[in-house]
Length: 267
Image (cartoon, rainbow, N blue to C red; front, side):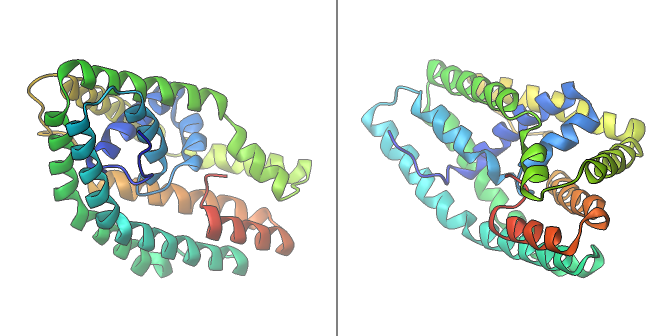
C-alpha cells in the first residue's frame, strides 16, 4: 500500500521517540548535529512512518481506515507545513542579511507553535485510533519497522548532513574548523541540562513505543506531543544558523539562505 507522505499525525510522536532514543545514546553534541536533519515540528520523519506501515500486512478494511487517517492528517497538518515554510523563509532572510535575531522571528515561531497546538488533540486521537485499528501482531510489526528504519537511516546519514552543507557552501578548512569549534562550544554550554533532556527523551520514547505495542495504549504522562519539545527543535535550527552565519562570506550566506528556504536544515 502506497501511503501519502502525510501520515496520521499522532504517530509522528512515535517516530520522534525513536529518534530521541538514538540521539540520547550519541550524546548531546552528536545528537545536536544529527538534529540538523530534522524539521522543527517533527515532520521530517513521516517518510519513515510511511515505509513502516508499508511493511505491515493490513486487511482491506484496515487499509481504508488508515487511508482515512492519512487524509484527515494531510488537511490538519497543512497549516503546520505552511507555518514551517514561513519560519524557514524568515530565517533565510536573516541569514542573507548576516545576522540572526530570534526576537524578530517570534511571530513566525508563534504561528508555527499555534498551528501545532491546534492539531495536537486530533493527532493524539488519531494515534489512539491507529492503535485500535491494528491487532497486536501488526502493532509489533509497525513498531519494529519504525525502529529498524530509524536505526538504518541514522547510521547511513550520520554526519552527511553537515558534510553536505560544508561542500555546498564551499567552506574553507579554516571555516570548517571555526564552525565546528563554535558548535562544540555552543552545545557543551548546556552541560548536564542537555544530557538530562536527551535522557528524558530516550525514556519517554521507550515508554511510548512499548505502550503502543500493548493492548492498552495510553498517552498519559508523555511529553512527545509537548510544546516544549517542538520549541526545542526550533531553537536548535535557529541556534545552528546563528553559529554558522558569522563565519560565512556573502555568497555563502546566499547559498545557505536558499537551501534553508527550499529544504530547511535537512540537506
